[in-house]
Image (tube, rainbow, N blue to C red; front, side, top):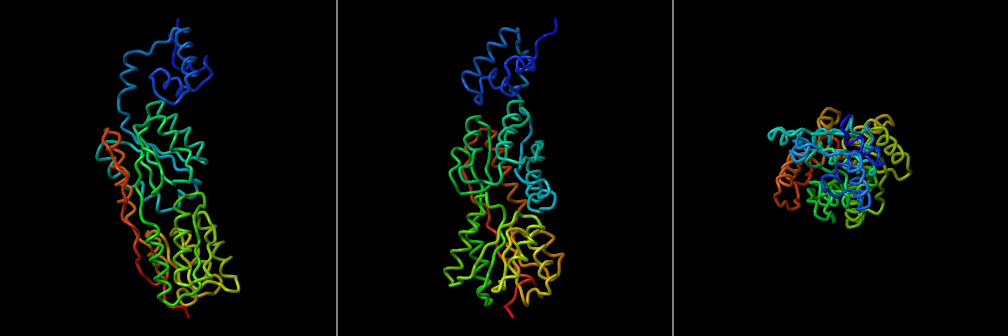
Length: 337
């Protein structure tokens, strides 16, 4: 007769193969009742993992997982993610680790991907991006005891170490610079509102403007894409009290905003000054070149990968603050006309 397989156990127990793996290897990730049912089914059908399979389950996968919860169209055009991944690869390749990537559409789907990867021994750890308030991923990863590093914060992430940068200081620097040029009506085009760093930047923008007496400050919501960045810019520029300066949460939206302003007959920087968060090649290729909040994104990714590899090796890793974005002035900013 054919020897029973892990797939047979999963089918008879009505669970996934990953759940069977958790139960058989004594890992967290399934309830006690589910574990008992799986073990009973395994006994009943005569399933016994081979020594080779057990050895394999204890072996390193030499892979790190990344499951960004972003629309795929954003990942395809956003230089920030490409820079981040290049930083990951710089460190991982030196240790002969691969990067396993899967784009997901919801945090719940992201959690299931981690469960499957960890249960199937496909990864040794994960790097998390886009920290949210009451982030559902954190308790699940702690339950699974899956090595992880969180990009973003500072916030309560339990035992999961974080790597973050000072968005408050960077946003304040940009607002003060524009105010020093003479701008009194400053606006902002934000990224995804579900993300913790978007809330942090919004808070910093509002507080910096209030401290300078800039009471006409307004934030328009967008999603990091050029399409939404352009639409948000047009909405701001048709206002009776249109802004004379706009800060964008990424470079893709800033480039789209520049195009929208020029399409409406406005001159940059005479009629509108533009500041872009993150300094990619895009910012230097357009005319005028964009003033930016610049940071070493590949370096940020490399630092996160180093943290995770230490966690995987069993070392104690503390949360850390990476270098903050700093202002790089170019042709897109000037005193208002």
